[in-house]
Amino acid sequence: MNVWNDWSGETRNHLIAKLADLHACGCEVLSLQFDDMHGDVPHLARLQAEIIAVVSEHWGGSRLIICPTYYSDDPILAAVFGDPPATYLEDLARGLPAQVDIFWTGPKVVSTLIDKDYILEVTDRMGRRPLLWDNYPVNDGARTSRHLFLKAAEGRELLMNGQLAGYAANPMLQPHLSQIPLRALAAVVHDQPSRSSEELLDFALRDCVDPLSAPLFVRHADDFAVRGLDGLVAGEAEQIGKAFGEFNDPHATEVARWLAGEFAFDPACLTD
Image: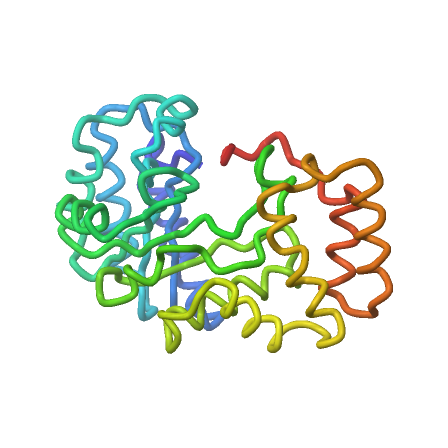
């Protein structure tokens, strides 16, 4: 953590050795993460660019991705990690090799809307297309942990026509349920960008869940996403949980567990 505070020869050699170990294990894609660290230090971009240059020189894999300390314009990052240096993103990107990709989450850490004009603005600041880290359908925050997001994120199809260097979706706390919106997102990317969210949900459910339980998912998808646990009336969570509990299906089981309050919020989470 905060390796730039001690960027000595010993630290550098240790990092180079670790890179060799990772590549020897078969790792081809490396993500170098500078996020969730205090960044209110002078010359932050220059120091990080020096570290990335060493990694780029010694990394034997096929791809290198970095996550900046300030990976969004969201003011929550400055509130938690200190004010970013002026033109931090531009200065960092200017010091990077052209082949290095940069993660970006959009205008917010959890971005509801990410439109093409915004992506073009970020592209201009980075001097390259961003690799979008989309914090959807992730639900590990104080607010979002009370919801399940089973549909594909809306509006993302406008970004799937060459505006991005790549797209990464952050899954929910429920691994099996995450398959549903991720399958729908994959359909948007690859072959079905014009389908409605309801059609994409049906498509994903056919691929992911017990067909006998699929109508129950369709019936309650909006309840889980919009109303959430706190919006269900007394006894409703127990009733719905009992219905899902009748299926011997890991997806339905995760719904029942969530309704029973088993997926609690971790206060260490920064997303909301």
